Each structure stands twice: as structure tokens, then as C-alpha cells.
Image 1: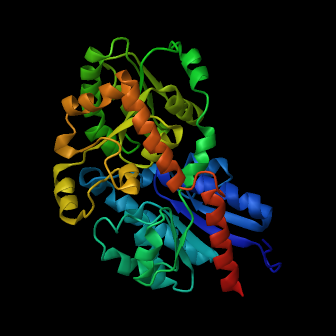
Image 2 (image 1 turned 60 degrees about the vertical axis):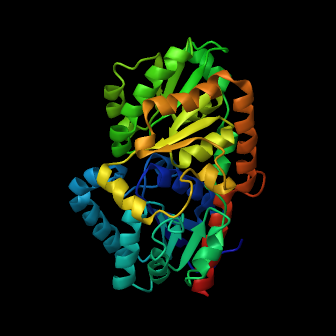
Length: 393
């Protein structure tokens, strides 16, 4: 792809939480592969984007919160960061601002930028799931964004009917599939026997998830270990919640390995016989690793009651949404009891046919997400560059 010779492009990328940081890091790598030094990237992100050379304006912990109880104390700093990023964008005049995931944070930036500097193009990378709830938000998005990069194949028709130009690029988690290696090596390094039943526990990366989900997972493990002799558990986490995780797991009911290294995280997916996971992007990662899973989610009572008013789909796990059937067990809120979670997990650890049936479904999910074709991040980079260079004329 040839770029205008007048000056390098400048893109502002903004990620407000770890999942967005992962996508941002992959997008930056794709931009580098396509353009080298002819694109300057500025913005806000975490370890993945910093590893690609970003000098982040602000730390990710300022905005990586979820749930009313967690968000309310952070509102002043979140609003301050919205304003700060808008002021930086207005001062630097990037060719486009790419807002990655975190709609509660990033959509405020988009709205303010459109009000204060409507000539700065704003791109949304990752469509919020407004097709599942609060569909009216799509109309507001069409006013505040110039381009939407969609991860799922059914999203462009939905958003286009509201007047928002949308390009399907595929799910960037696909390119992490090649990193799902090293399972046997990780077992050996941690002293876990090759035939030991290993459960990967994934309570989420937000402080609210550690608060609401990890205690239930802990109780579920206490039930599972009674029925699966020799059970070992492994819990991948991220630095900004690692201290809380270690405190919360001090009296864990089964042998536990807590890991923070990203490569070890992916190796853990391959090493595990099954996973107990909070709903989110990690379920797609597990699908790519072909790791059988049980998915759950819990939030504060008020948050849940509000969400129930608007949610319109039969499933909340992305794997089940893509297949339009209950391929993996999903337990939400009051249904996510320790006993129910244990009942769903134990067959995946003890019944080879049950595990194999789910793995076959995960193969189908991987294909639907674009496994085997051009990487989604490269398609996203192409879409952004095409859009920006067309606007430059």
C-alpha cells in the first residue's frame, strides 16, 4: 500500500482496558508491518501497546474498571482522562483517532471530539454489542464515528442500517492462535505431571471481576477437587490486579499456580484439560486453543438488574452467539453457583467424549472468526489506512 509522500500519517490509538490494549498492540504491529516509520502512533494503552513502541499518555489503571461500584469512585479521573485525550487530539491533530473497545470510556471521547473538533476523523475499533442490548445507541454512534471496524460477520448489516460506515475485519484474537503453544513445557516447568487433571481458572482482568467472580470460582474449585482426584489449577492474571488475585487465593482449595507472563498464559490454555472462565474475549482465546470451557459472569445486583432490561439475545458467551446454540455451558449471575459450575466443569475433566464434543464446536467457532485467512489486525490496518489516505485526497 503506497502512502502520500507529503508527511507521515499520525494516528492516535486509545485503549482503556487490557482487552483493548491487546487489540491495540496487534494493530500497531500490523501498521508497522505495512508502513514502517511512515505512520506515527500516539495515544493511551498498556503493556501490549507499549511493547510496540507507544509512549502512553496515561496508565491503563486509570480507566480499566467495570460495574457501578467500581466505576463510581473513578468517575472524576475517567472524565478527566476523556477531557485530557480530547485536548491532546485537538493539539496534535492526528489523521484519525482510533478508539479501541471500552465503549463507556471511548464513546465519551468520540462525542466530545465531534463536538469540539468535528474535522478530526474518529474510528471505532470493536463494535460494542448494541445489537444485543440498547440498539438505539447505534444511531448515536453513527453521529460520533466516521468508521467502525467490526469483529463479527453479522455486525456490518446492523450498523449500516443506522448510517454508520462499517467494515468487517474479523476478530484479532485469531492471530493469537499461533501463540497457543508450549503446554507440555509449561507443565514440566511447573512440575505438573503430563496426566494430571489441570483446570485453568480465568476470573477476568478487572477489579470488579476479581471481586464478584473469583470468590465463586474458588468455591467451585472446592467442589470440583472433591470429585476430581489430583486436580491442579492454574490462574493466569495481569499485573494491575495480580496483588488482589494473590490475596484472594491465599487459602485456595487445590494446588494453584498463578502466572503473569503472557506467553505462559497462552501455554496454560494448551496445557489445561478444561477452563472455568469469566465471559469475555478470553472465551475466544480458549476456543482457538481448543480448550473445553465453562463460562460464567457475575456483576453487582444493580448493574445486573439494569442489564437485564436491555439484553435481547438468548446467549451471552460469544462462542454460543456465533453458533446460535448452547455449545458451551454458560451460567450468569444467580445461576453461577459453585455447585452448578462444578457440575458443568467435572465432565470436561473426566469424560473424554464430553470434552471432544465441545472441541468439535470450538473448531467451528474458529472458522467463523476467520482462522486460516488474512489476519484481522492486518485487515484493520488496511481499512484505517485506506480511510485516512482517501480523506487526505
